[in-house]
Length: 232
Image (cartoon, rainbow, N blue to C red; front, side, top):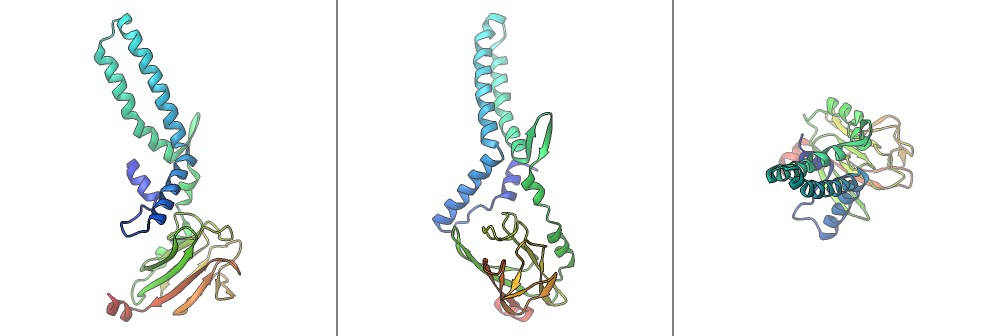
């Protein structure tokens, strides 16, 4: 997988109809991720070392009788290696003498979401309309036809930047013509209204999901198949 594909997988790029504040927020988040994964530091150090080596090589080449094309080839190969280094720095924590997979990429493998996808049934399920808000993005409303992961991590379908929300807090999926919610052993619980979900629960047509008794709210509306056809 290319570096571009990895970045697209981990970063939600802004669309043309998003507000400037939302776009700036996503750019800031991507910049923080570059620093967290040490991409900027490692690539910057590599460029500095490459520049020093190129200067030394260019100075010594005439003395050693090395042709100019060898110096140029050294610089070209060094520059071409920058994207490769950035890829490994993004994907791995480079800790000599080994490469350690970045912890955030490990968390992308969400077993509960995989479990929900295996159980999900599209027949007679319609779609689920979710509405929520946060300080950075404001109000958001999305339709989902597939299982939905909810949590604090950016790899969730619904990301809630609230410390009361677990990294992977809950998952929604459709089965037997109805949508369900499963709490993923979260620290502060998942609530339908003010009733705590124990394990899994069937969602009513309209409700509020809370993630902590006084935590963030995701409003839920379940649209049946007939409504989907009419609205589509």
